[in-house]
Image (cartoon, rainbow over all chains, first blue to last red; front, side, top):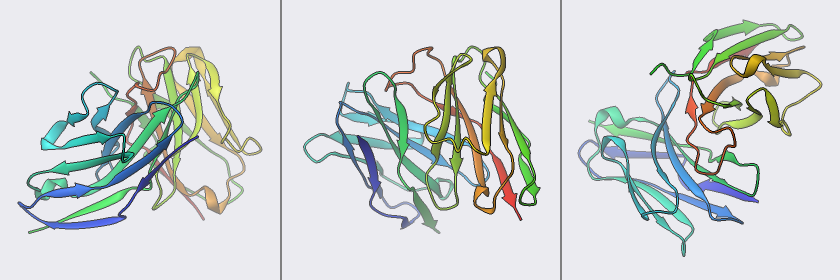
Length: 114
Length: 117
């Protein structure tokens, strides 16, 4: 079985300050992990993914995430928030044997204050 | 490269009516997915096709929902009859591989927002 927990439903940061969105996962197999962003009335866009290569993954728009197996975590970070980063962020785990599917977290809404 | 296309973008119906959504995946993508995203929740997989065969429909409410993928390309998702709790965004996604692995990236369309009154 697999699951993902996003620890914060809402995060507020000031523009120019660091962003941390937390994600913990559970998986019986070696997982692949993804972060997607969803802007209002837009589709989900892939930010980055981990697929058992480097544990520190760099994505688009300055985001990165670190896979920590011992902590079963895959937290998303960005050094300096921009107003355009305000959106909903979803952590996703995918693993299994034979048939694979995405399991989404419940999402974290990021608010960026001017 | 064109993305995943969905129509309509918005739909309002009354309960017990029927509704259909259409999806055109990225050209050449073998696997197609339909998700339901209820307000405040993450998307939940309803059905997964590989080419025109169903791989996983374990969370599809088959008494009212149906889906097909003709000729392994476009897909339609139908709800008949609709209930109030079907109000949600319906997302279509596609991925390249014919045998979707754990590492496969899924590309999402803009979704259809359904409101059932």
